[in-house]
Image (cartoon, rainbow, N blue to C red; front, side, top):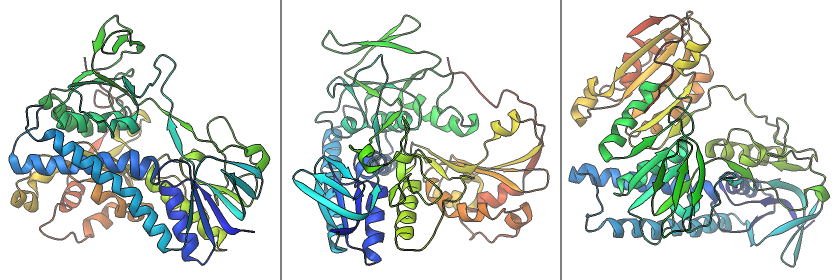
Length: 456
């Protein structure tokens, strides 16, 4: 065998898997058909969050919202693009420092142990598929990279548009709406459901809606896209209610499709239309071939992909590990303000008609919030009738930073007394969690107007 491990895909799952395998002493190779970093590190979540962080700090310093008349807004955007191009260099250097050999190009399985890249035939004892997903759009809208674009195009525009229509008010759509609105682009956000960020409690979404309103973001829900007319100088989105929206760019954020490597049948790997099924150790139907990250359809979040990549590496190294249950997976939406949390949403509890307790506390009421001049954001905690924590959610600046480490605590079945007895540093913003737990109110398990909303 040429290598102990061959990893297909240089996104977060493949990158961390390669590092862990090499760290364990395995001779490791990685194949990437485009750029290292994938959607997570190069073309999706990281660049959007990096730019939003920079814009937020600039706005705080200048106490203004950007507009297209800002003299240096275009230079800020170009500087961000140049900075993000350095990601691939950093990834390559870190992999090479660990002894990972990198191959670039389109490849295909020849046998269960061999993979052809260009003219190089690579043989490996173990193979890890980490090829991820790509935007799939939908039948009525065909992406062309010029007028109708995807997230990859959106973070590499040579010139900022004056107007943009975003199809899909999901997490990706809202994050890009926040980014381009902050850059002074006139944004129109479309959603076929009756609310943006469907599945998220109204009170958590409301601060984002307030920000969008202040920035002039136009939102239309409960309306489907029928087609995009590209016959004129600008694309026109045709809607199900008969209205039309014209903009310089149309960004589509409607779902993703799996990037199946070529030759899966030759590899003896069973796959379904949208994923490669795996067992609890991330093994495919062929026991020496693993599938990690978005390609296996579990989770669809970068932090889960990273953990799966490390888990696969550990199993290859003989340290048997299994996927943990999907309970209380932490999530975050990197808008301005951010939304983050884990566990149940209040609307789920209302819909299931169970009794529960809810406590909320604003960051502005904490003493640290007072010293920092924070005026918005809050914590919400949800407990069952036996005082077991069911959900913990936050809205506000940088709340994504607090959620990750709370995951392990949550999984241990933390109780109300545990939370009340915890010692949050004083003064700190995390005291809001403690305060929220001290301000619980009983709620009947009957669905009411807080569970859903329609924005007209």
